[in-house]
Amino acid sequence: MKTARIELSVPAEAVFARSVRMMAANLAVCIDMNVDDVEEVRMAAEEGFVLSCATKPGICAIGFTLSDQGIAMDFSLGTALEDTGELELARLLLSAVCDEFAIDRASAKLHLMKRVS
Image (cartoon, rainbow, N blue to C red; front, side, top):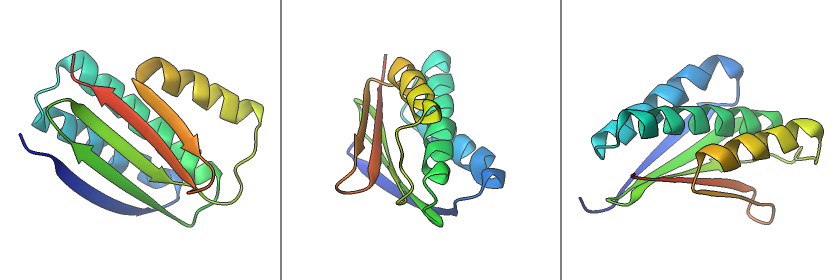
């Protein structure tokens, strides 16, 4: 598969978490990830979206990049990104289910990557 980029723009409201989670899971299936990987992508997408919403961006822009290696997800972040216990819990969870996890404060982006097993 050549690389494919999918952009999704969602209001930063909890009610849309399921839509983001289902889109991510569907895209993971498209690149032939196994059931365990799909579940981890689903979990990472939801946590990434919740983290993005907590930073109050108004609109959460999510970029999915698909390749033979896996799926990358980039979430926009708002200006309310604070180092709190909630952020630390999100870091712990996302670090556990993703192969790459990074917050870039300069570009206000959360980057997650899950590789195909």
